[in-house]
Image 1 (cartoon, rainbow, N blue to C red):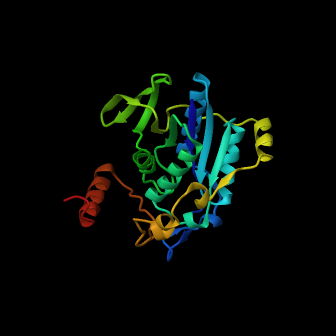
Image 2 (image 1 turned 30 degrees about the vertical axis):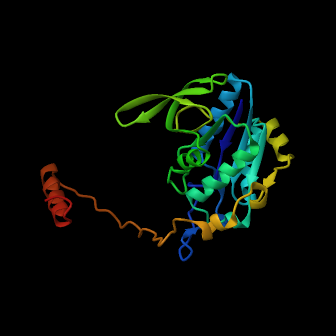
Image 3 (image 1 turned 135 degrees about the vertical axis):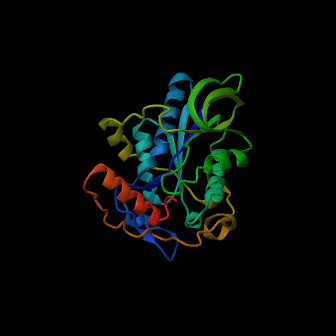
Length: 265
């Protein structure tokens, strides 16, 4: 069984977020970056699938050379192979263009049975790349997956639990499939020191647009079907007010203020 884990490098949400307001994008080079939190669960699910079924894992990321860090982390976690899709032409790609590049990489890997990805990234928060990837590949699409019940490699089918409003849905689908997983589907492991040292010395294969057979006119800013029209940073929150006195008096004061602000009528 061949398994792919799609991973993304994103700005560290614990650090200061820096914006290129005129350009309508994040200043990624000016921020510390980490592995997308949701993708850590995708990597772990790929590792668990390999442990329960014979096979190998290929981790794929699209981004600048700086994204090699997240792939080295994958190698430290014993992923078999990694591929970095990087090209100046990819910069500014929207979700569909990103999915198109990843789909081309998955086709180049060949004979893939399952693709795991996190349900969304912590920078874009669109949650649509996994679905777009399945659509482009023409594979089964399984989103919001909270549990893998079973995988039948010989029978080419997978059974999962999906989180839906008010409950859980059990779905059986044909392989190959794209599975986007939720936080909490597993407990992501940490790499050990030996794995980190070994990964630091390994070369990261890079694929550009030509390697992938991607039309540069359909990716990047030029090929994006969606564009950021405007970015605005919320104004700083003003100082709050602490009410003092008897409970009844404070309740009346608070009610009056909420009415003045038209929060309540």
